[in-house]
Amino acid sequence: MRFFHQFKWLIERALHLGGYGCSDTEHLLFAYIEGGLTDEARRKLDKHLANCSACVRYVRSYRQTIELTQEHGLPEIEMPLELQSRLRDFIQKNPELR
Image (cartoon, rainbow, N blue to C red; front, side, top):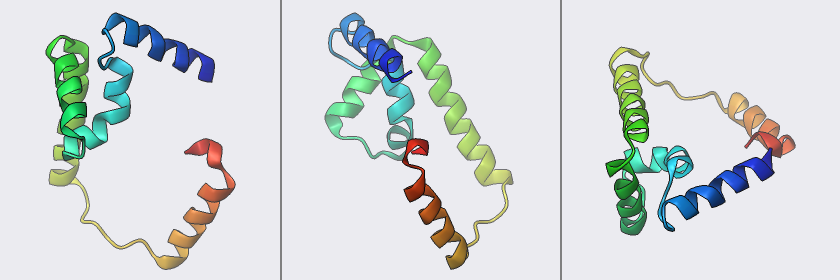
């Protein structure tokens, strides 16, 4: 499975002349929406989005999901410390899930 993702990434690089491709949109989406990308990364992703209607729809649906969740979701509550600890332990014991 990992080989497939690496192969896909290499093909996208070739097709986009070293710029970003659709898989980059998936990986960088959260940082892109939250404004956490470097200027260079944002420019590369914006260039890809200018020519990829599928990724534009993907980004738009992601933004809408965030907006709807904020508008209609339950208020945030602090995760209990015991649950935080158990979750941290679970993640450390299962690195393949990261």
